Length: 464
Image (cartoon, rainbow, N blue to C red; front, side, top):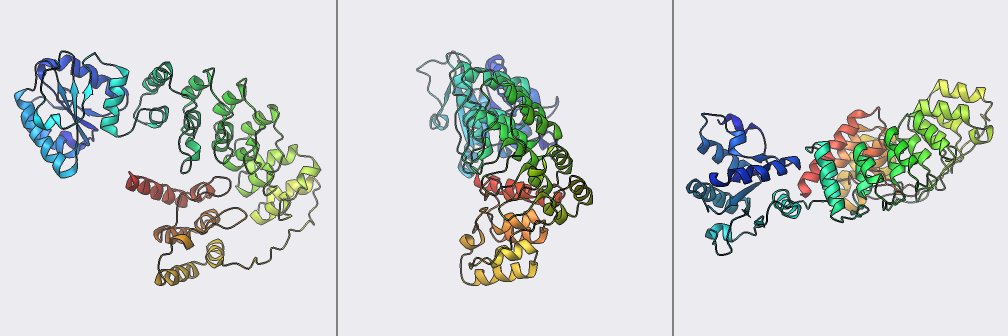
């Protein structure tokens, strides 16, 4: 077994030794972009069999880059290209010819190479040429999003590439499809999501950055940062001269609402209050206040802070079901919050509205909500016996547009979550706030979060 092949690579590099210096320069640029290249000089241990190394990498990599310079194709490259041809036929290995400076217009590529579109570096190593080569290797066009998301980038290298993209006139407010990933709507959204503080600073320093841009659910970058608990990025966003911190989502949620939902970071609530946000403002959809949200999501430090800061009017506010913060604390069984609210002299006698049955088929949803595993299995089996269940199992119910999977994850019913996912429930289905089942799961149910993260990763791989 060839020991050096344990590591994975994105591309195998084939070249004539006469072009060694140029090839190393290009490979160095690719490495700076986070692309893992197999170059014999870098990977082969002295004394190792280069033939074994090449055979192993060609059969295990995703792409082969064949450099052609003024010296033409070296004899050993012929053997490598035959191996590449075999892999191209068997598994569609990407083969990318690269023309180096000195190659004449008259030079004919070998028949096999001539069938593939090439990357032209005859005028020198250019950003455009490297972008095209990167696209050929990874299948992903170079964009702000691809640079920010790629974990293998050194942050300084990523910053350099972004600066080049900006200098070349790339739109820093470019929009990405937000149906599946609304939290990756623009480069700024992506930088916030992945907590890339230095890149956020770079983007905010551009005169034409649209800091208040909203995705399909009405979120801004500030909502996203507040929800994620990134206090440094929240502070950076709030310091920008164009920020409008009072923008609400399509459901009428403020950045304070999202902060109370996503984290237990009191500092973010204080920053938002100091920026002029009403930290007690309820959403216009379900009338939840940030205090109610913090209690529901078990962010109790934030809840304690809000109780101390709130007026009695805010403390006695009710949501669309006439539930108060006090009632939610009682449901949570949080003695400390109940005591704190009573000390503030809240009204403990307000009662929620009894929700009558709305006369529709919600058996699966109700069973998932209440944790009736056997009922869930029976209902799924019955539906399968009648045909496809995809539409039925993914039905979302008003008023929150939640599916059975979403409510099961929120309630912490692990076995039901697994049963639903294995039966075809959509793990990316979003409710009216734009949250997936994983994002609705309470942090203490880490086993459900891990399971859903793995399921999301598996489905992403299958979709590639």
